[in-house]
Length: 413
Image (cartoon, rainbow, N blue to C red; front, top):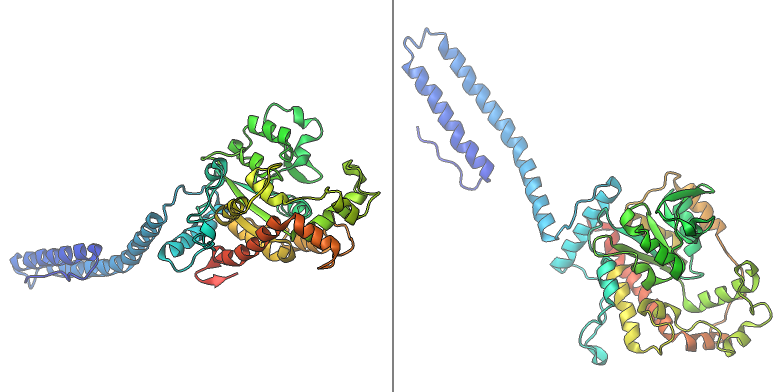
């Protein structure tokens, strides 16, 4: 007999189709050549061997084919999305694959993160972001690797203190904050961790320029000991990282006018922060004297503290957020925290109880009079912070667009 393989079968099945009949033919011919086949004891043995061999081939083909297909699919998925490095920690595995799926959907054109129409207004191309940001801060759709460190940009009075407590207390993550510069640790010559009131801190202060330089000298990012680095100095904080040990940028935004009011009334009572001149003046007089913030967020993102800002600076700040920032909103804090947890693969050993206590009880809250829309104070703040307000509105758009980052097989969270 002549046996021919089915050409439609996968390669593993073609091998089986050719090899199995050859073995059966060999056994059949052996039986025919055996003397006194009808009475020989060899015939039943050979027949049993044929039956057993066919059973083994059926099982092997059934099991091997889907496994082989899964391997091929995984290799195709990995190659199509340029998986840079396999994560070594289990907490990163799921989000790594999740980002891989996001990257595939972006490549296939089934979705896109919000991109402004740069052809309008005489701007033909997306603006170039500063080099240290482009090299040291990972793009949000890049798969997370074990050498990446979460970098939280702490915008004052926008829920950052709550985020610190949430991850330090509820998640027991090691954090780098201003606490690392206390208790003599600003003199430490080796990077290390310590525990204070149940929270694990790095022994460096990442909230001041001097502290950031100290942390850089001690190779904070390279140590891999910190899970989250907190700082209000975006550009200074980005210098802690490098193209190998990258930062993963995330933050919480709040409307600039609400934030400015909260900051002013907080400083009227926060005498422990040693900031004087707030308690003896009204908010309106304070603004008329030119002492309020003026586009703080755009200045920090573009590293322009004293220069006059332009619309081009706003576009640079937008591009930094679009390509590198996981957006959170203070008025949607619980959803924002859930997104952060999903993105970084974090889970709380205390469940939701700790989170609920923080969100409902609050941290560093300071009740204050509400600024009415259209009031003189509102108009003054708007005039002084117009670029920041536009950036905040853009962040709101990004928050909605980034839903794709937190979806599993098309199911939004």
